[in-house]
Length: 186
Image (cartoon, rainbow, N blue to C red):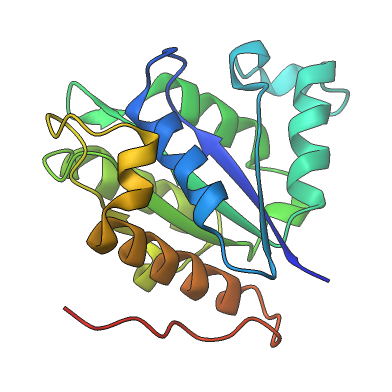
């Protein structure tokens, strides 16, 4: 049995660094951690509380994916010092969704400069009663680094940092069978 982690990308760009980061995480995940990247972010309608009780199909798909997960992994860019509309809209659809409450969440950041959005996203998640796993929230210096997915996997420091974050997230999900991180501390 593995820890099912649902990954949400706050960017819809085809060449998104955040999407690349999530794909790399899925490939780096240790045995016992399964990462599924939700592919319906662009199909979610704008949040409308009038539709919350009987949500549109894409919202139902998101909620089903969240309900089947033991943790969330979010990678999202910063736009104008704020959280992307894509990720905020998805979270708005989860505000009144009981399976979201207490769910362990890690926030990845593909640009260490994007601290405003990271802080705002963590505040939003805490307000929504998610369990933000601080040890699993990391900034990965991808912006301007010229790395692709393969080079992320082949860069020991990045790969180790991502594996460590995933281990912390899995451990927070309450599953005891996932080994604790065993990487050198830097």
